Amino acid sequence: MTTSKPVTALDLPPVSPLPEATQKYFDICQDKLGMVPNVLTAHAFDIDKLNAFTGLYNNLMLADSGLTKLEREMIAVVVSSINKCFYCLTAHGAAVRQLSGDPKLGEMLVMNYRVADLTPKQRAMLNFAEKVTVESHKIEDADRDILRDHGFSERDIWDIANVAAFYNMSNRVASAIDMRPNDEYHAQYR
Image (cartoon, rainbow, N blue to C red):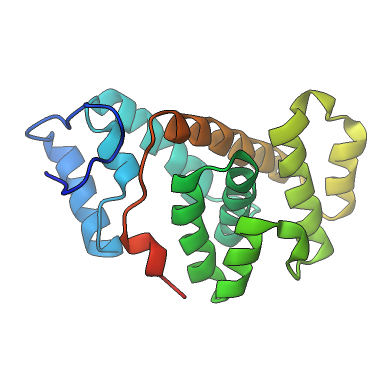
């Protein structure tokens, strides 16, 4: 597995050859997405770290949840916007455009989610994700009650908090190592 441009500012080449299960996972990504996301390539220098990352990502973003896939991607974009994470804004902005069928929504969430035409429930969810990102230590029962009042279950609130926290961690790592998004993301679903 080679790339024409560095994926990160660090010189951590992927394990070679990749273990069979990892290669199969990368092949699935290539078939479904037309690329192997650079975030996976960046983690491939340590297969245990790659497996931990993909396990948590798959659980939070793809497993059963009261939150839709679009809502989880919206959280990823809003958190990444606050953190100014180039990689995640590019990759998850494309996902929002794809899942919503609305390129404007993806752009609005990247720049300022408050200008987007959101339901009150979506706005409450994103306000909570913003507070998790900016001042999680100030979250109180009243903040969770707002989500409950909009119909979110206790499990949904758990999922909102965990998706927001995951992207706060991922944003910081991606920014710190100058992780670069795949070029393909920039033109997708516009």
